[in-house]
Image (cartoon, rainbow, N blue to C red):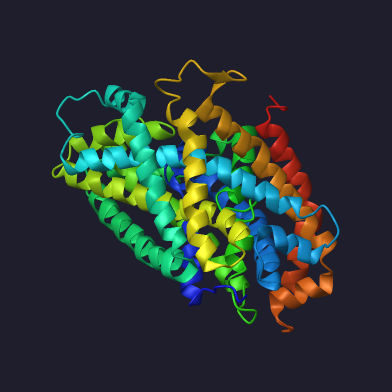
Length: 446
């Protein structure tokens, strides 16, 4: 059975970039950049993205494009009669768990998005921290919002690669850039906005710590969706004649560009009003409403910000569900639709404890963490690093060097030196780096 393919290179690039550009890259990375040395930290992140993230992204592209198979069967095709296909299973399981609590955050954005439509958020003197706690503590609201977020994801993925994911990405990704431009233009016109720009981009090497350096390394591959074989699945829909180096570079630079845009949209406004940036959800749901409350047409701009975050969250969710559905449906469009609904339903059920972690099930703990934080820790600190490490070991050791060279350069002699550098970095440099990041994520160095 002939598998679907992307209709164009730009469709693939936008879809892959959409997978990489999630809410973590938009709100967490700018914050950590600001408090970890500003431009110094961002420079490290840029370098690590190019020398760690990009080689890993190319490795997944090679696996997917060369085999034309889903994550699990791609590894089996390269290393038959071995256990290496478990890399694909790890990716599928990781995405299943990840989407179960990622959809909860998507649901929070849906709640605020709907409230924003009716003007129920931006109010003079409002307690935004209390409003956020009340919103995520209401059981029915969070469950319905999570279901709505997953419903959108299921509908798009069920339609297939071209008519679903690619078409949605071609709409949402340009819209995301347009919204950023509008918000940055407004943010930079505020009084004292340059202080926010300095906070975000001015290098301050004295604030760099070993933890921030390790975070920059870890974020360089986590932010590109590598390690869970999502990019193996996405690249498997590429024609064999399609080059993969240029699309990989495009995805990396788009990811970096979005991180810069996020910082330029958020921090000038925050500093202009004398507020302190907060980490994680607080920045979006507590600090930013306070910022936009003090701006002319603040409700409109906050609504645009919510739309931006919703778009970024959805494009990442598409890829998480796609790796699971591609594995189960094996290219059968009829099975794709039914599996999308079935798996989406199971993910919703698995995500219920995470959705209720800040309300009804707040007393339920797993190793001292609520269900949401426990699922996040399992994915971010254990499953993702293991997946990245195994892929970095698999590609240079299980695929012959001449095959890799042919896949990346497509029989061209141009780029041989860069290929050799990529091969050395992937085989000898990245594995020990990932082990160090893995140990730090587990708290071994603390």
